[in-house]
Image 1 (cartoon, rainbow, N blue to C red):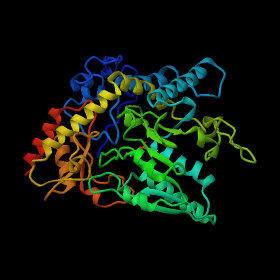
Image 2: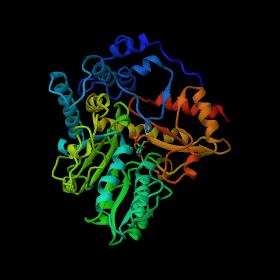
Image 3: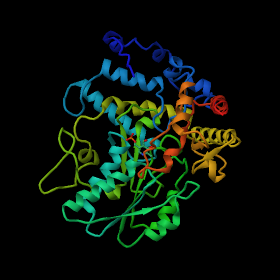
Image 4: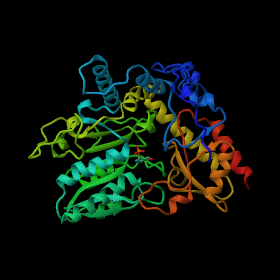
Amino acid sequence: MTMVVPAAQECLSFDASPSVSACPVPQAPLANALDPKAIRTLFPIFAEKPDVVFFDNASTTQKPASVIRTIEEYYTKACSNTGRASYRMSSQTAGAIEASRQAVASLLSARAQDIVFTGGATDSLNTVALSWGLANLNDGDEIMLCMQDHKSAVLPWINLKGILSSFGRQIKIVPFEIHDVGDYDLKTIRNGVSERTRLISMSHIHHVYGMDMEVPDIREIVGDNVLISLDASQSAGHIAIDLSQLPVDFVSLSGHKMFAGTGVGVLWVHPARQAELIATRVGGTGAFVSEPPTTSVSLQTLLEAGTPNIASILSMKPAVEFIEAVGIETIANRLSSLTLYLYEALKNLPGIDFGPGPGRCGCQGGYGIISFGIEGISVSDLGFMLDSEDILVRTGDHCIGKAGEQDQYVRVSMQVYNSEEEIDRLVETLEDSF
Ligand SMILES: Cc1ncc(COP(=O)(O)O)c(C=O)c1O
């Protein structure tokens, strides 16, 4: 593939993106939040590529102009490091980072001091395994996880098991399963939990099956002594999350899946767990290490080492403002009705083979994700065919912990800028392929 690299002048000019400056900034509440055409006017990419149907939102969302503008303005007008200098521009950057933290905290009904910025959900989930797991797991302790969850929620624990083993500590990974309809098989959790279970790693909404994995049920089964590490990558910014009520210990999420820039994520740590963590990366002015180790420092001092991805952290604030302007309930309802519409549109296609999730469970709605195959056509052929019509879906590796049957599905994942007309276009294109 040949990449067209724009000339340096074009890259650097602040005026190089007329569609960015032309896009309005959303005001809360947005008057026409249910109208995808109105929402699309806030996203410069749709002015550049009006014919593209973007159905790969579980992988990353498109960015509203307010997010792009914030990133551009940081680099063009305010580029400075944070926490390292006494001049005003640097203090302003530090203040803007705290404003972003506060915005994320409000979205999640959390306290800003319980939130750290990371490099993404993968980074957050690895931090839980290393910062908590290294310090707290003993010989014979058990971690429960589901091999059909995202690799980022699975592999950090398998990696930790290897690390601990090389230092003579043996922990056990106890797997649990997913039902054919796409939610967790609670029986396998009930059977797997033991007196040695220390933590269960789970998804909030599954990234391929698109089901709510029922935190309250899992908490009831495992009891109060087992920690829950929740991967909220597909739920944050999609449904209302109230961390003052959700019975979990760690929450990991990804900024770029909720309209912010790439390379930023969030880790929320329950206040009761914070004293159990150790620093796993130290250096810069952020992180702290001492001999002997002490945990009497803030979560940010402990876990935010080095220069962070400042531009993307700053973009979290306009991303949250966009979500609030549309309304989190409106987003959740819209994703649910789009899921239902997609299911109804797909279900009569000859050879349709729904994967686990809304296609199989008979749910009246969902969270914007449906995975399916079509008998007699390979998923890669489906992917190429849809791409040739500018309909972008996920095929191939779905990043589940255990590679296998899930790769036989095409995943459609939607957002508030998607429309019923786009779903009709997808289905018509599939029909034409028979
Ligand atoms: C459920 C889930 N967890 C974790 C990740 C990893 O997120 P990030 O790209 O921010 O590391 C993804 C991304 O695809 C995901 O869908």
